[in-house]
Structures are given as structure tokens and as C-alpha cells.
Amino acid sequence: MAKIKINPEALAENPFELIGKDWFLLTAGTQEQGFNFMTCSWGQMGILWNKPSVTCYVRHSRHTFGFMESQDTFTLSFFGQEQRKALGFAGSHSGRDCDKLAETGLHPEVLEGGVSFEEAKLTLVCKKRFAADLDIADMPADVAAQFYADNDAHRMYIGEIIAAYI
Image 1: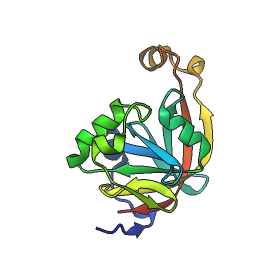
Image 2: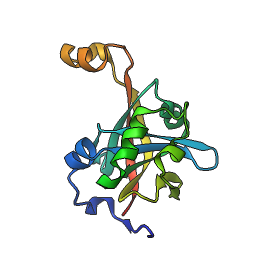
Image 3: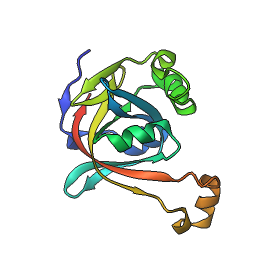
Image 4: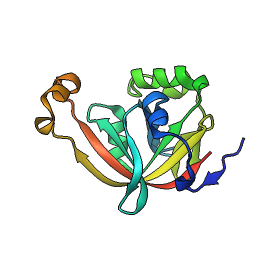
């Protein structure tokens, strides 16, 4: 089924459900030069600098990190529950060590220069607008202890949503 391009500001989905409960795949890179995807359950959606925007987080140790650093376009792909197993696999295995496409059975597609998946019910194509490392020393002690005991900090990426597809 062909995707339909919509205005990002027309989205009616609850971001708490989409991000925190349903999860999403963050994909960076190009189909021609290579890409990687990872499962995420942290992030924000809203308006920043008068533009529809997303914020997502990638640890320096993740394979996707290099792709995020080298590209200006990335996608957030959201799925129905029928893909939950694929998202679980993508979140617990590295693209350094396995062929995630073969293992998940997902089918890549290019949208506005970004890589998404045919199975996605919603894809946000984003242009990287800002990136900064989170400073563990500036975090509340309980957050640092729970999420950063290994000192593997996240880099925060802010992306302008340049297209949305359903």
C-alpha cells in the first residue's frame, strides 16, 4: 500500500503512546551508502523554533550513532503491534553483529531521502537541526545512577519534521 504524505501538524496520535509505549525505529543513513536502525522509547514531539520537531537520543556506543553523525536526514518509523517482535529484536541486537533486515523481515523504502519501512503505519522524515551530548555530571543523581552507571551518555538530536507519511 502506498504511503500518503500529510502535514505533520495534522497528526492526531498521542506522542506518549507512540514513543513510550509503542516504540519506534530511528533510522539513519542512506539506502545507497548503508543505514542502520534502532528501537527507541524515549523522545519528544512538538514545536521548536516555529517548526514541527522531534527530539531523540542515541548513545555513543550504538551502531546508529555513526550514521546519525554523518547524515542530515533521519526517520522515525512507527508500527502496529504486529511488528512488536521486530522492534524488540532491533532494540536488543546491533547492526554491527547481524543483518537486522533479514532477522526482522522489514522492508526498507526511501521517503524524502530517508530510509523507512513499508510496514510502518507512520513515518516522520526529519532534518537534523541540532545535536549535543547530555552531561551526566549535570543530571540528578538518581537518573545518573539508573541510566548512566556505565558512563555511556546519549547525544540528543533535534530534528525538524520535513515530511510525515501514513
